[in-house]
Length: 224
Ligand code: AMP
Image 1 (cartoon, rainbow, N blue to C red):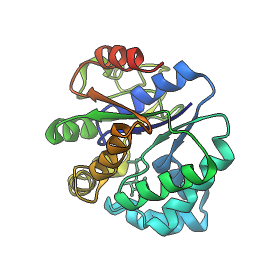
Image 2: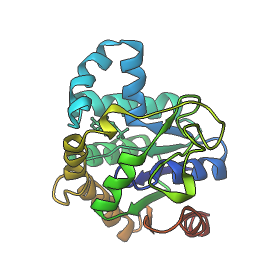
Image 3: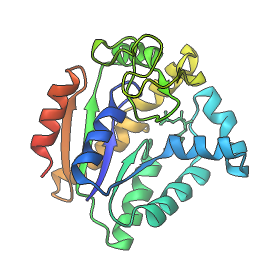
């Protein structure tokens, strides 16, 4: 099973992504932002190059990002993948589709979580990252996943914020990229929507303003 998930930063994409992984067991969660953060943490050359872009909320250039993600799909995604954070523009969408066609890899589903920009921003500012497991959902601006005091609501671990989550200019830049229907991430999503219209993949649209449970139900009823 190979799935792409789209959603603006703050849409609950991480939470729904976890659900998809649980449903299909062995899917590799391939998250471009997390791969970059690993490189930055490990002090690699790629990490050093990527950091200045990430700190400003800019996209890391395609000549670094595209080969890195395509390589990761090959090495870690042999038993299926959930691709998250990529593609983020038209060039990435086209290169990904080209690579999948070339290798005869089926794209089973494309999931898009829709959310108005202002709600997405409030959610980002409220996001807290569990130091034990960064997939544990915690957000001080969403009632259903409020942390327990200042600790992770899932495991009680310590929480932190991502520096780019608290920077309004950076959030705005990231959303400019996401909501750009001409060349940005919504253009990439549209590219796959069109492929779904041609019967080449399946496209699932979800309303990200709903509760986690209602989104989950709709998502699970459409994934076979
Ligand atoms: P994320 O964790 O998805 O919010 O990603 C954090 C940052 O990593 C982004 O703001 C970008 O600077 C960079 N990044 C992640 N994915 C991509 C991508 N597909 N293309 C370019 N830059 C990316």
